[in-house]
Length: 85
Image 1 (tube, rainbow, N blue to C red):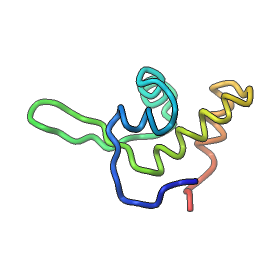
Image 2 (tube, helix red, strand yellow):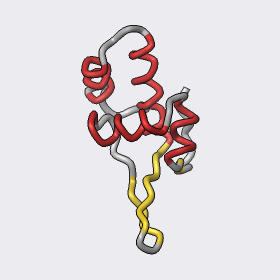
Image 3 (tube, rainbow, N blue to C red):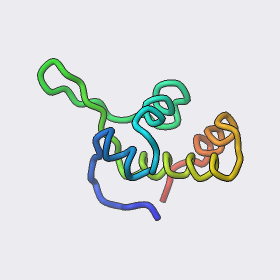
Image 4 (spheres, rainbow, N blue to C red):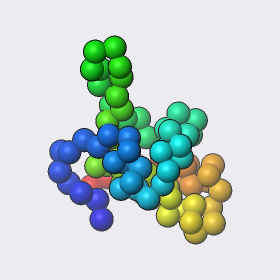
């Protein structure tokens, strides 16, 4: 079930919510492009912030991978799913 709040998750919290490692999260974002997090600057540092919808999509990707889909196929399914309710 997707949370409908306007909460933003940091990278660690998003990875924990989705049940994946931080390294997997960064790979799926940077290489696979399954979600595009917001980027917030704090001084010279940049922080990624994930919406509840982003976390939901990441969780969906993980479920598909757990069912045996390849990363490419699962990412394609998640990307083409369209906007979530």
